Amino acid sequence: MKNTTLIFFFLCMVSFSFVDVNGQSASQLVDLCAASAGDDATYLQDFVVELEAAKPDEKPPVAKFSMVLKKGTLYRFTVCNSESSPGKGVLQLIEAGNLLGSTFNASTGQEYKSFNFQCNKTGVYHVFITFQEGKAGSAVGILSFIKVL
Amino acid sequence: MIKRFTFFLLPLFMIYSCQSGGEADADFQIPDSIANDAALEVSEEAMEEIVQNISSPVEMAALIKSMGVPYSNKYLATTDNTDDLNTSFDQALALGIFGADLGYLNMYNKTTTVLDYIGSISKLADALKVGQFFDFSTLKRLATNNTNLDSLMYISVHSFNQMDDYLRENNRSSLSSLIVAGVWIEGLFLATQVAKENPGEAIAERIGEQKLMLADLLLILKNYKKDPNFAELILKFERIKEEFEEVRITYEKGEPQAIEQDGMLMIIQNDKSIVHITDAQLGSIIAVTEEVRNEITGN
Image (tube, rainbow over all chains, first blue to last red):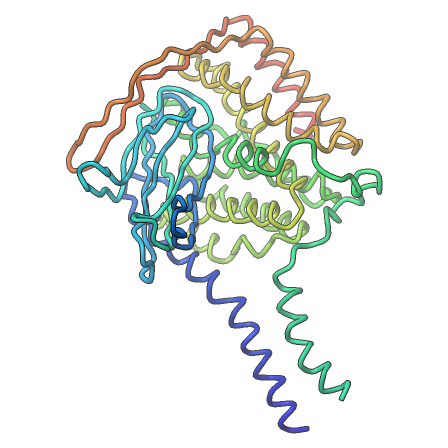
């Protein structure tokens, strides 16, 4: 009976710890990434991403988010990788199927932690987040408001 | 044997119950005819696409402040009736309205009044069983300590985002849609009141663009039109929609430019949206928005 009780309590401890850890890690990364966006940035929205590695002969998985951006506004998009992420996150801004901006320039290999977007057309935009070379990864994207133009 | 088996199963049950979503919209006693509907008319993906930031208190307040318009508390919804709101429908709508006002107050650093709105938001969030997203004591501490206003802004916005995500992930999208509706109508009210007293092209254009947001918002709300409260809210918003009918939005195409400034990549969009709104149209929108918003808030 005593052994059974001990096993029961152990299982309870394990079950609650699984519920807790992952949520805290993502939340901490959002807080850190939002703070790293810049002193001139006001947080608007976050995009939490965790993707598996691409399977052979398959395209890398992509996480997609949508938002409304307004004309006459300067926004900033920032991407931050979790410490344990095997892959480096790439954030792309898409509108009507057109790539407007990316934190990774595939042709030059240049990486940017953030890019600013001067919006002149109010509408629905999409953020795609993927990981370089199709690796698995976990990252956070942040949309910040910079200023009215 | 059965007792041992039960001991092992109980923690698994606790994991499942902590992680599983709540029952579908138990909040305002939806009639069986709605609760048992097979699927919403708008897909979940489209709903997420539309809802996320259809109206942003930060951006509207920033536009108003950038015009040099001084702060005015006459624009704000009263919090006096918070304790009288006893249906989840009214509570969710008010939560959105106060959320918009909180964005305005934060933008103007009105920390004393912020405390009042944070208090009402916390009460409403608790009533809606989403109080876990609003740490009242932290928000109060930040509001009282005038040197940490950026953190106050961040936590305010982030809390609303987390609450919205939670509601949608836990089959409570109807409440999420009401909160969005509350944020939207209050944001439009703020903008139209400012435009009434401080006319200008930028504010008129931002008001005219709401034609697009309103169309999307009505799409979401009409998923719940069988509920009489939603039906009444839809009728109110349709009155505003009528005044936007003749507002036109046109588009010019252009190629984006990418330049590097001080080590930061800057993307300049050369596509443009242009809002065509006359003074008469704006006047009608201002008037009916004021009527509808005051009917909702009791101001």
